[in-house]
Length: 121
Image (tube, rainbow, N blue to C red; front, side, top):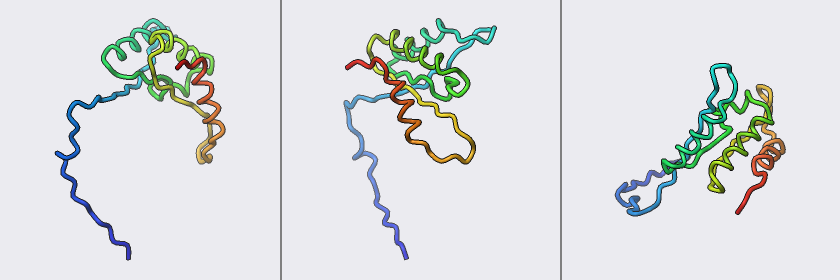
């Protein structure tokens, strides 16, 4: 019989005064009334997120990565990189598959390579 050992943790012992907190916020991809990507709105949103001290995350599910084209996903990455001027951001990876499909590590690796184009640093 497996026995679980529970350890009591004193939450006060976990406090680390003065540590830097890192926050990441997924960016909602804005659209115009004519259902086109609002590139100016996106740039403003990325900028405001970074100015608030958060790391922007683009091409996530809130960025409609599964509904926009590969070219549009790449344009989102270029715009984000330009707006942030070399500061870091998180880029999601979208791999189309079918219900019940197995995990395709190679496809995710290729998406990650596409998302890291022109990376500096």
